[in-house]
Picture 1 (cartoon, rainbow, N blue to C red):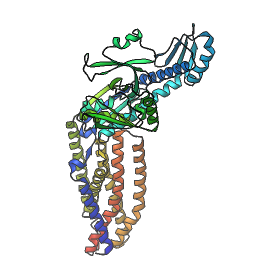
Picture 2 (picture 1 turned 90 degrees about the vertical axis):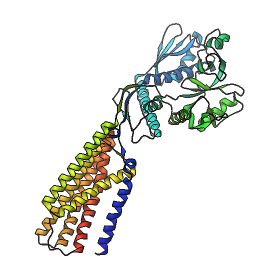
Picture 3 (picture 1 turned 120 degrees about the vertical axis):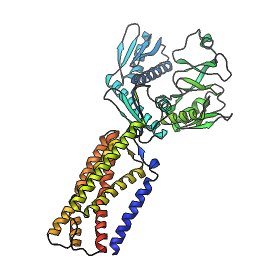
Picture 4 (picture 1 turned 135 degrees about the vertical axis):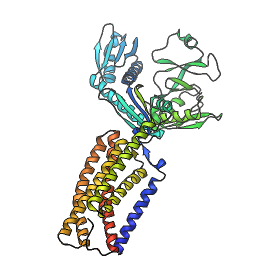
Length: 519
C-alpha cells in the first residue's frame, strides 16, 4: 500500500473517530427540538397601547415642565388616552407663548386642535402611532429573546406570529418549569428611581393630609412593603411621575447579598445613567430614594452621599427570585405588557413517538438503499453503503459538536441526505462503468470516474447549499431545522462520496491485482 493511500485511510479513520467522540454520550450531546423533546408553545400579544401611553405621558410631563420654567400657569396638562395630550386653562395673555413652546415640544408627532376657554388637544399622528406600535413589538421580541437565551433553552423560537396583530410566537423546547418561564417572559421589569416627595405613610389619607387629599398632577402615589410591619405591612410614598433614572440606564444587574446576608439584586449604570444618578443623589442628600420595580417600591434608602455608579434592590427575595430579577433587568424592560392568547404544552410522549417514527423511516430507507446497491452493483455496492453510513455519522457528529438541534423536519433532512448520498455514488459508479467499457484498466477507470464526476457533484451540491441558505435565512424554526441538516449533510456527502468512497476503492485495489470490478 503506497503512502498516498495510507494517509487517505488515516484521514478517514480520524474523521470517523472524531464523529463518534462528538456523539458520545448521545443522551447529552444530541439536542432535540420542541417537536421531539416536548416543551412549551405560546402565542403572546403585545399591548401596544401601553407603549403609546408612556410616550404620550412623557411628552405631556416634558411640556408641563417647560411651561413651569417659562412661568406659564395652566389648569392641567394630561394624557386622557394613549394618543392624546390635553391642556386646559391656558391664560389668554400667554397664548402665543404657549403655542410656540408646544410647537417646539409636540409638532413633530402631534396635530393640534384648539378648543374654547384656553383648551388645546394634541393628537398623535397616524404614521407616528404606527411606527411606535411596530417599534414596541420589535423591542418586546428582542427583550423576550434575550431573556429566553439567558434561561439556557436549547434553540428557542421567538418570532413574529401575525402581520399587524402585534403577536409573538415563543417555543421553548425541554422547558419543565412552565410557570417560571412564563413569569420571566411576561415580567415587565420596569425599574425606576425616584426621589420621595412625601412619606412613607401607612395610608394614602395620611400621606395626602397636608395636600387636602389631592395628588398633584406631576406626582403619583406608589405602595411598598414596610420594613417595620405597620398597617398590613404596606406603606405609601408620594413621588414624581417622571423618573430621574430608569432601567434603560443600567449596564448590568446581578444577584448579591445585603448587609444582613439576605438575597438582593445589585445593579450598575452606564455612563449616562451614572451621570444622571450622580446629579440626583448629589442634589438630594438626606432624602429618601424610592427604588420602584413595576410600580411597587422595593426599598427606599436615605441618600447619605452622592452616588454615581451602582445601587442595590433589597427585598424579601429567594435566591431564585433574585437570579430571575437580575436576568430580566439585564435583558431590559418590556416596552408594554403582554397577554397570552395561546399556551400549549407539547408532551415528551409525542416527541418520543416522532423520534421512533423518524428513526424507523431512516433505517427503512437505509436498508432499502443497501439492498438496491448490493443487487445492482454487487460487491461495489458495499462501498456505497459504507459511504452513506459514514455520511450520516459525520452529519450527526457535527450537529452534536456545534450544538444544532434535531427536529422532525431535521429528520426529514437526514432521510434526504441518504438519497443525496446514493445519488452521488450512482453517478460515480456509472461513470466508472463507462470507463471500463472503454477498455481501460480497473485502477485507471476508478481514477477517471471520480475525477470526471467531481465537478458535477460540486455543481449540484453548491446549488443545493444555496437553496438551503435561503431556507435558513427566511424560514421559521422547523424550516431552519431542515435547512441546517440539509446543509451539513451536503458538505459531508461531498467528503464521503468523493474522498471516502475513492479511498475504499484504492485500499482494496492496493491489496490485490484485479482485472475487473464487481460493479
